[in-house]
Structures are given as structure tokens and as C-alpha cells.
Length: 152
Figure 1 (cartoon, rainbow, N blue to C red):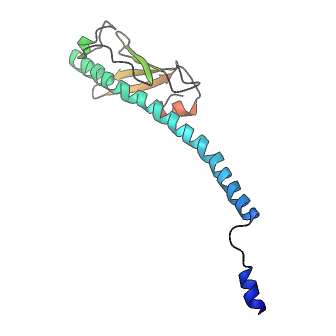
Figure 2: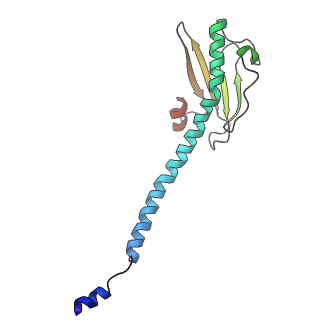
Figure 3: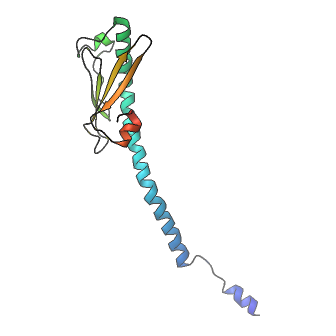
């Protein structure tokens, strides 16, 4: 008879300590995941800067190959084969091309501190077989900029 009484009083559910352990585990996972997610979002926004600049890099490279040099006027978007200056995007407030050097300067916006108003400069180097691009950032020593743009 005692066995049947024990079965009737069997536990139905979780104890308070089990629930507290689960909540603690979820808290630890959230404490690690949220900063990683925010870092991922920042890197994704910074990568959009590269995408916004690609068409201008292609235009400058083609101009350099066809004309054996770079445009002499920074406002000569039509000479680069573009109808005008690229429109601002969510992450890029403006793109300019430096006359005679072909350097492209993109200004970052809406990414968050400390990236807003940071500029990324893409400088071309022309040799006999290719055009290579070097990146320089106005904000130095930032690991996200180093990972996305290669800026030191």
C-alpha cells in the first residue's frame, strides 16, 4: 500500500531550483550573444560601404586603363561613364573622387559611434597588368574597420 501512496504524491512539474538554473543558463547565453550580434550588425553595415563604392571603383579603373591616367576634374562624373555622383545610401553620406590621383573617398553615416563621419579612402595604384586598391580610414586602430576594409 505504501508504494501506491508514493506514486500518488509523485512530483508533477519542475522545482524552483530547476527553473532558476534554466533562467541562469539563458541569461548567460544572452549576455554572450547580444554583443556578438551587435558586432555582426556593425560589420554588415560597414560592408555596405564597399558595395556602394564598387561602381565608382570600376569606373575609375576603366578610365585609368582607357585614358592612361585619372580624370583631371573631380566633378567629371560623366567622364567616368557615370550620370552623376552616386546617391547617398543609408550607410554612405557621400562619395567623391580626387582629381589626378583617382582616390575615392566615402563618408560613413548611420552605423553608430565611433563610425559616423569616418571616411574610407580607396587609393588606386596602376601597374602594367592591374589596378590595385589600398584602403585608408580616418579612424585608426578599430578592429571592425581592419576586418572590413583592411585599414590599419
